[in-house]
Length: 159
Image (cartoon, rainbow, N blue to C red; front, side):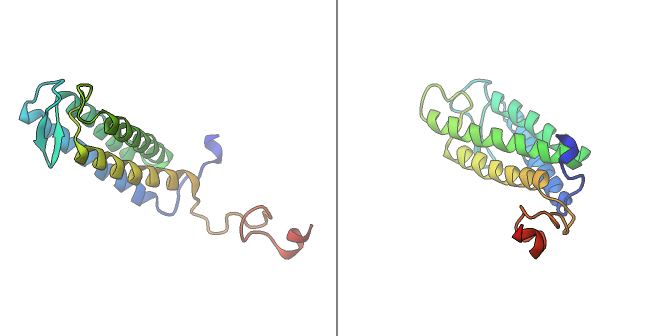
């Protein structure tokens, strides 16, 4: 399937930089979270950059940040796939943790601000990743194909 994916989309630099910026923000959040010294599994957490964190959330944020930075460094379809996967995971995390707010099962010390952050960053990364996977930098893509919108000639559309 990889041979059918575009090698270089028109905005590859944008989704690559977007993934790197998201990775940098997550890594910064994780490092600051480690410095506040919260317990690993506390449900209260410490405030860092307007969000709550504990040791486990800081560790997970560091891993996601490094993965995004690694994907951005490699570039191409790897960056797009990385953005898509991490974006999806952040959206799912936001949904799960929304259900766990104000319960004893809130082992990542999430608050509503964390949920909103997960949703926003998840949607942005997912958008960057999917655009990178499904677009082509060639404006002539689809010419001669009567199945594509605007593609093909009048003769091919009549048959």
